[in-house]
Length: 406
Ligand code: ADP
Ligand code: ASP
Ligand code: MG
Image 1 (tube, helix red, strand yellow):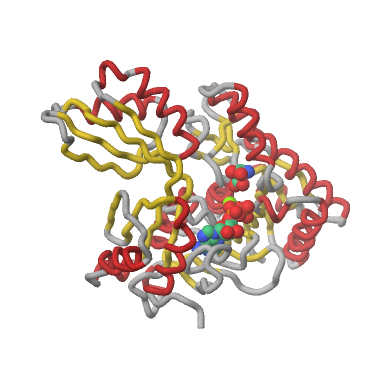
Image 2 (cartoon, rainbow, N blue to C red):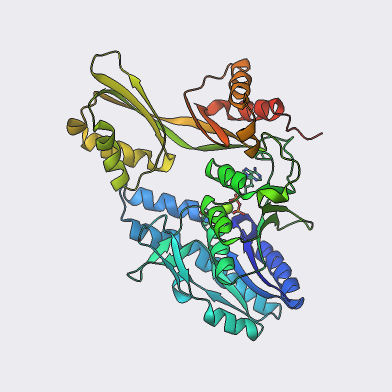
């Protein structure tokens, strides 16, 4: 007998038939004698439409109310799945974040889980009950609903697996594992049997949304065994493992992309000590994350041009915050460009191999793709390019690094 966490993403619970399909898989595990906690996402598309409703209501909506609205989809799927399980003769109940409770900090919209009380759930495991948990949500110090950032049900699942000391955390989704790059864009992408935590962390943080970044961080910290697998097909998926478990390591193991990028350029900013702090301070206060940054000497003396990226969803707010401080910040012009994509090549083998970045720049140049911003870390190289070249860049790089499936 094992204790397992099974997480079903949006497409895996998109309608009642799919919820029934998930329920069959859950029943099989429960009947095998396992203690099962299930984490569900909202039905595919539901969270997006809630997010649009909120942004139509107000540009700078109160994030506590945003959380009340966008968390609602998971409540529906948790209830429906519990009903379907009961209908199949499986003892089950639904749990909302506040009922467990899953305690979070107060950073609404991207709250961090601090603690999960599992005693009652464990007691009910003893009675053979399956726990169906609404993912993506918890409760803050004031008792208000908080959400964990987009894709956050993965993090709910891993956090629950850690709190329950579960043997496995299976992430059921609409692909049968983690691929060298998004298989929906590159037909020659290859499924990986194993990927290291570190690479998965970079892949996720650079946009491979198959797992939420925080879920990988948490799995790494608490040694949770994640397996990404298909809800629709049987068979093993991809295991996320420690580096020692991988025998032969490629220099580049994966390529990620993120369309969720927008470029902001401030022209002719006064070039004084403290100016960067002044610009990024108000953005941080508005909980806007800044990713890539480049600073250039401006054509005008004692002025500098500053380019950085924010998430597309934050662009409007970033513009509003910067424009309202324009006089104090002393920039002449603000240019905003949402039509960009960040492409990243990732591999722990980069630590010991030179020339990976050069190969990337050449592959892009050969295809006439202009690089707008570059950033690197120990195991990745990222470039910002025009969004229209996403497919061309991904396919070209995938071939250039020898990742294409035979
Ligand atoms: P879920 O709703 O189950 O959480 P997501 O849409 O969040 O599913 O994540 C699965 C999707 O991630 C896949 O459909 C795929 O298009 C995308 N994806 C991006 N990069 C990769 C990758 N390297 N390997 C597998 N899937 C990827
Ligand atoms: N439903 C949430 C979202 O779409 C959480 C998740 O699916 O993981 O972001
Ligand atoms: Mg997801």
